[in-house]
Amino acid sequence: MIDPATRRSINEAEVRRYFNSWDPGWRWVLILGLRDMRANLDRLGQLARDEAADDSWIDEGAQHCEDLFALLSFLRDPVAFARRMGSYAAGKVVAFKDTLKVDTDAAIAKRFCLPLAEVLAAELSGASDPEAAIAATHDGYARLGALVRRVVDFYETYEFFHVQYKHGLKLPFRPFGGPPRGDTIAERKTNVVGPLFALSNEALSKLLKRPPSQQAIMFTDPGPDARAHLAELVENRDLLRIQMAGPPVDLNEVAELSRSVARLLRIAAANRVALGELDGDGRQIFQLPGVEIRETLNITIEPSAPIALKDLG
Image 1 (tube, rainbow, N blue to C red):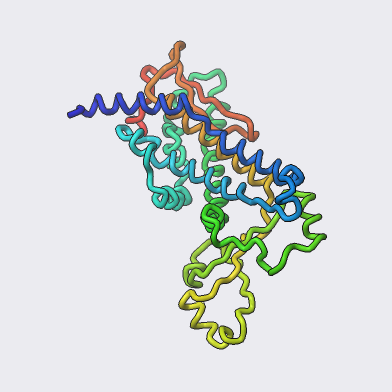
Image 2 (spheres, one colour):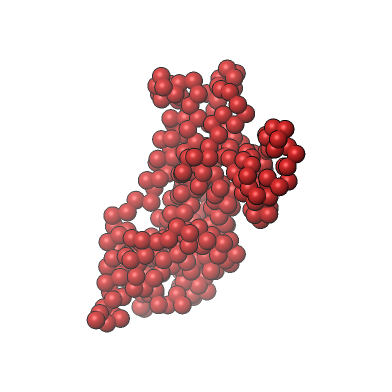
C-alpha cells in the first residue's frame, strides 16, 4: 500500500514529466495548416479542385476547447493526475464547461493553479512599485476569467457541429440539392469564411435549450405525404432538417481563438509546475495573460516558503 505522502510525491513527478513533453500549441498549428489548405484550394488537387469545402478546422477549434476543459478538470488533482490524464470521460469534460461558465474570476484563477489575488498582493507589497504590481495582478485575474468565458461561448456555439463533423454521417455537403453554382465556387475560393450545415432530427424542446447561436434551423419540403402529418413527424423525430451555425464562420477568428486556448494551456501548465518549488534565486513565478494576445504577465514573488497545491484550498 502506497502511503498518501508518497502518492502525492509520485503524482508531482508525473505532472512535471507530462508537461516537460507536452506541446499545447500543436492543435493551433494544425488549424493554421487547415486554413492555408482552405485558402489555397488548388493545392488540394484535381479530386476536390472545384467543390472542396473542408471545414474540419471548426471541429479542431472546438476540440481545442475540450482540451482546455479536460486539463482544468484534473490539473489540481493531488494524487491521480496520470490516471485522469490517460483516460477521461468526454461527457464529463464537456459538462465541465457549464461549471466554468458560472465560475467567478477567483474560481477560474484557482483552476489555473493561482493563489488568491490577495495572497499575491501581500507578497508583492515589497515590490519596487507595489501599487502598480498589485493592480496589474488584479487586471490579469479579470482577463483570465474573460478569456475562459470566451472559450466556453465559442464551444457552446459550435458544440453541435463539432460532434457532427467529428462523426460525419449527418453532413449535407449539398444542403440545397445539386452541386454549387460556378459563382458560389468562385466566391468560396476568395476567402476563408463560410456557413456550417448539419442534418438534425433533435426534439424542438431540446433545441430551444441550446444557446441562441445553435437554434437556426431550416425545413425543406418533405413532400405531400409527410406534409399532412408534419407535427407528428417532427415530434417523433422522423424528419431531418437543416441546422445552421448562425452567422458564417471565419477561419481567421477560429485560428485566433485557438491561439488563445493554446495560451491558456501554457499558463495552466506553467502555474501547476510552479507550485511547491522556488527557483535558484528563491523566487516563485506565476503567469497571467497580458494585455496583448502574445503577452504573458509574470508575477514574481519571493515567499519564505513556496506556495503549494495544498495552499490553494
